Image (tube, rainbow, N blue to C red; front, side, top):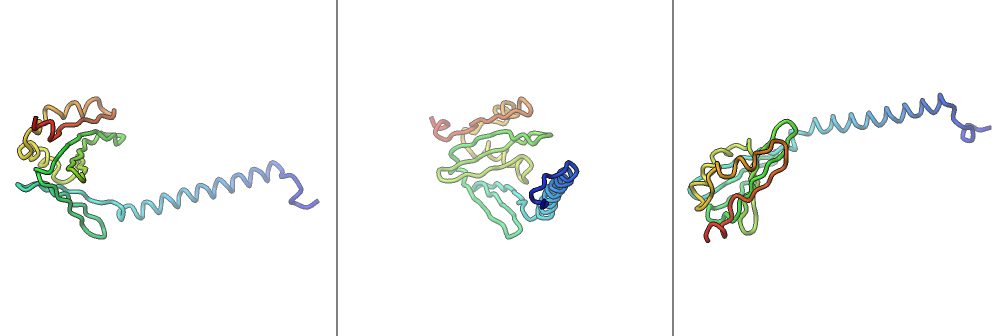
Length: 155
C-alpha cells in the first residue's frame, strides 16, 4: 500500500498539524516584524499653525511635507468627536469648507492654539465650555457633535 493511500496515524496527523501551526505562527511573526521595521516610514506627523489669515495644517512624511491651508472665512462647518484609543480618549475636529476639510487631533502640534484661535477668528464660534464636555463625556463611548455651522451662525 502506498503512503498516499494509507490513512494517517494519529501521531502523523498531530505532527502535520503542529507543522502547520508553526508555519502559521512564523507567518504572523514575520508580519509583526515587518510592520515594526516599517512603522516609522508609515507614520506622518501633523501640525497646525494659525495666524490672522487662517489655518495651515502641515503633514510631514518621509517623502516630504504637504501643507493644507484654510482661510478663516472659508470655514463652513466644524465637528468635534471623540476617538476611543483603548486606554484614553482623543478629541478630534473636522474643519470643513465648501470643497475640502481637514482633521485635527488632540496631541497634534498647535491643537490648543487652534481651539483658542477658532473662537476669536470665526464669528459665532462657541466657547470651549459649550461643546467640550458633551463631546468628552461619557468616557470610552463614541460621541460626535456639530459645534459650528456658518449658515446657522449667520441667521
